[in-house]
Length: 98
Image (cartoon, rainbow, N blue to C red; front, side, top):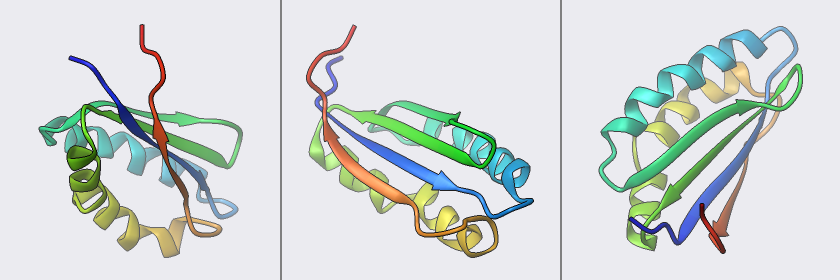
C-alpha cells in the first residue's frame, strides 16, 4: 500500500476546552477506522491548547471523500464550542514513507 497524499490540520482549543477537544479527537479514531480510503489517521497534541490531525491516502479521490466525510462534519458541529478559531487544514503531497 502506497500513500501519495495527505491532510495536516492544526486545531486550537478555546481556553478551558483542551480536554474536551482531546476527547473529541480520540472519538474520531473510530470514524477514521471505518473510512475505507483513509490509510493512516493520527491525532496529536502539540502543546496545552494546540492539537493536530495527520491523515494519509492512496489517492486524491480518497482524500476528497474524507474531506466530505463524517469527521469534518462532526468537527463543524463541535468546532464553535471547542475551537478558538477555524481549523488550519492543509493538503500535502507525500514524498517518502517508511
